[in-house]
Amino acid sequence: MRNPFFYILLLVLVVVDGWLLSHPNLIGQAGVFFFEYDYIATFPKALGTVAIVVGVTLLVSWGVRRLSQAVALGILVALLAASAYYLFQSFTQYNTGVYKLTGAGFRAGAILLPGLLVLVFGKGVWDAVTNKRSQV
Image (cartoon, rainbow, N blue to C red; front, side):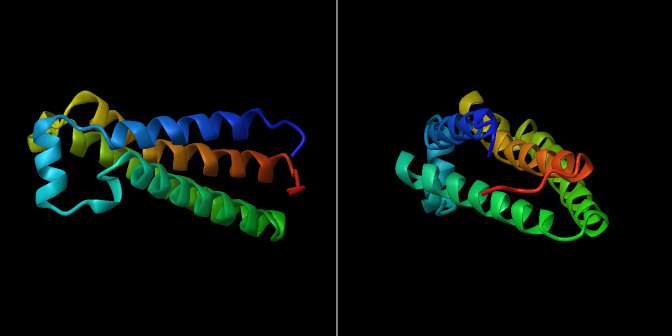
């Protein structure tokens, strides 16, 4: 970990995403209550949820990069494509229908989480292409 800027930026984005997800408007709060989304009901729970998801993503990316370069690149590109699809799906879902009424901040937080996955897997692909090994 020679340059910690990526991880500092990721930490800031995780905190921002946790805060955004835990602060929906009144309609969003009713949806969180009705659908029992307990994992984003409060800021600590939302922060923990986002941190766990991003942490697991970092561990998967790190573990895959330990494989041979060709295998790692194939797996990371597939994971990047899947997370990009998840980002696109989240963007379209949260900007239409009932989700459109949950508040701009909540929607931004819901879209930011798959964006964080794209960011982590994108960095993993970049590191695999440039043949950088993890030094954690």
